[in-house]
Image (cartoon, rainbow, N blue to C red):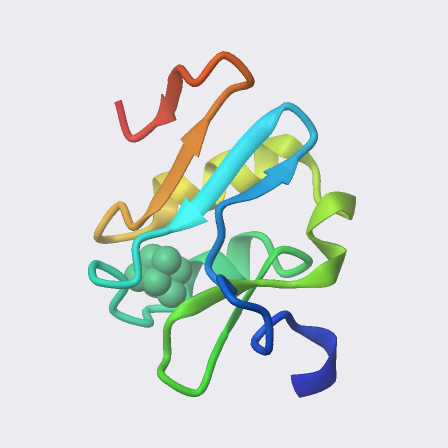
Length: 91
Ligand code: SF4
């Protein structure tokens, strides 16, 4: 699992560009509830600090699943914008 994620990169919690979406995790908000991992398992994994980070397979995830994961996060730590910089979630 460890070599599958982007924990070694500078900003493992994003922002990342996934299709038409720009997605990132606010690490100060994230409480490691892992709901996002359950909803979008190709996109999110928890790092050693129990903060959500992006997997290399995130671009294989359906856009809907990523948006659903953001909506399911109990503290709204997953932030999504569209290509125009318009907030998709949270609104
Ligand atoms: S669901 Fe939210 S709080 Fe839980 S790990 Fe994901 S981003 Fe963090």
